[in-house]
Structure formats: structure tokens, C-alpha cells
Image (cartoon, rainbow, N blue to C red):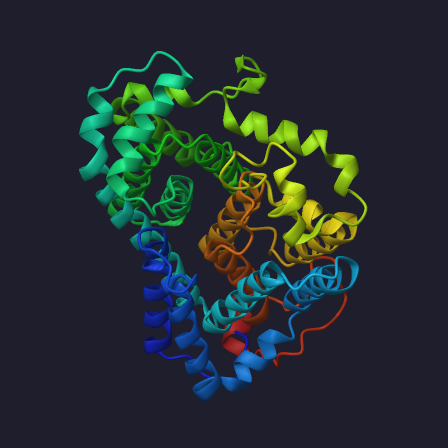
Length: 431
């Protein structure tokens, strides 16, 4: 086992689990002065780590993934301040806060027990959000009938979104609940106790039904792809995998309302007045149409939400909407240089995901979280979300404290000292 720079206490572990469990509250409450309530929570965590865990925090800040993130933010600041001569650099600062948030989470994941408590934090947040969603929306969605995408979208707006409040983001809610599905699958596959196996499988099925109530197509893709990635890493032909998969799918098809499946389509057809009926299709077509205008240096944050954005169909007459894709949004802001900086960050993070995973529940959980976070980047343009801080933090924390502290394929030795392996003559003979 690797030594840590500073010891970790049960208070640290409990604090980590609690922060993750309450994270979705930012989707239910309005911002304070343009800042989410979780900003103040992370600010308090930063103060605690600076005062009591300074050495561990400093070591984590120097992790290669964190440094790649700081370079990416530097590129954004350069384009805003120099290329576009703009003082609207708040988007780059939000990205910086996202990366710093990841470093804070990584500093808390200093042993396997802490990492497991973080996973339990994800499960807790998924369960309480699922309970809330089912109590407020399951009856209305079950009694509704939808024959096509348009009718299902109307049900989503009137029966689900209206019940969650004006500040709730259904896609963000769906993403957080999806973590319960993914991690429940991992823990059900890797536990040896019968009752724990089916407890986690039941949690996974329960969260899956709740996630479908949001009618988020992106969440369904995230769950499907993440579970497939986990099963592939674990071993697809194991009997436990087949039985668990059948039970999960059977439970979902029995309890999920029929109306949700009417919205699980993605079609390029159905244009009204030259605008696609599916808003996401329309946004992606706008991204492609204006590609030559922003590909080299971007238009900057001020240009996108200002003069340039108002001349495009991103403008709906009241405000400029984002591109629903983090890669496209960064390119629009800062051109190919910004995109390359972002891809470099993702590449560094990918190389620090441990493999092979085998039957290690923590490695499989990290794999599922990483896949889901990457897929989320394809359907949202807000890169500063705390969900990305969590994923980035657990990748950094896992490689910094739990596994060998270097990228896959690298020959660089870990700077963290290891305990010497002492084996008695009796143990050697037994092996």
C-alpha cells in the first residue's frame, strides 16, 4: 500500500461523501450573485484543505492532469485578453474553478476507503433524486399518452419539468441519477455477498426507472455506453453479467411508463418553417453552418453572447443559446487552439485511468464515471459543471494516491514512496 503525504481521517471521508451527495442541490436553487450554492461549499472545502491538509493539496495541484487543465485555461485567457481584446474572461475562470474543484476532490480521495465513500456519495445523491422524481412525476407520466416525439416532449415539459421548479435542469438531474445506475451495476457485479449483489442491482433498476422519467435521450446513451464499457472490462461472458443484465432490463421495461420511450428518438426529419422540430438537431446544424466563421480563432465569449451570436440562429429573439456540445462551444469561443488544449486535457486524463480493471470495484467505478462524464461533454456546452470536477478529481485522486502515479505506458516512477514488502520464510514457502 502506498503512503500518503498526510493521513486521512473518517471525518475527511464523511465530508467527501456528503459534498458529493448534496451536489445536485445546485440544480434546484437559484444562484446567489450569479454563483451556485455549491461554490460556497467548495470554497469551504478549499479552506479546510489549505489549513489542515496543505501538503496533500500541494502535491495534487502538481499532478500532470491538473497542469494540463491550467494550460487549457491559459489558452482561453490568452484568446480573450489578447486575440479578442475582451474583458469577458469569466468563462475561462469558470473552467479554472472546475479544475480546482477536481483537485480538491482528488485531495480527499487519499485511500481506497475514501474513494469507496465517494462512490457511496454518488449512490446517495442518485437515490434521493430518484425518490424525489418518482414521487413528483411518476403518476403523471404513467397516465399520459404520447404517440410521437413532440407529444412526449410536451409531457416532459408539463409533467416533469414543471414539478421540479424553474431552476431545475432535467438533463443535469438525469446525469446525476444515471450515476446510480452505473455504479449500482459495478457494485452488484463485484460484491460476493448475495444480499448486497441484489441490493445494488435493485438500486440500479430503481434509479434507471427514475432517470427515464426525465425523458433525457442523452442520459439513456450515457447509461448504455457506460454499462457496456464496464461489462467489457469486467468480462462479458460471465454468468453473473448475463443474469444481472436480464434482471435490470426486465425491471425497467415493467416499471418504466410507456410515454418515455416515445421521446427516445433522434431524427433529422420533421422541419417546420426551415427549423428542425428537434431543437438539438437544429443547434447542431447551426454549429456546422457557421464553422468557417469561428474555426481559426473563435469569436470569443463576448462575441458569442453578443454581436456575432445575435446574427445566428443561436439567437432566439431573447437570448443566445449554447451549442449543446462542449467541443463545439470551446471551438466557437477560442478556435482550434482552444479545442486542441481541451483535447490535450482529455488525453492526459484518459492516460491516467487505470487498466486493466479486472474485478476491482474502484477501478470499474472510475471507468464508469469517466465514460459517463466524457459522453456528457457531447451533449452539454457548460464545461464548468461540478459533475466534471468530480470525474476529473477521482481520476487524479485515483492515480495520485491509490494506483501508480504515472500515465499508462509511461516509464516515469512514482514520487510517492512505497512500503517495502517484507515476507517471512513461512509465507514464502506457503506461496
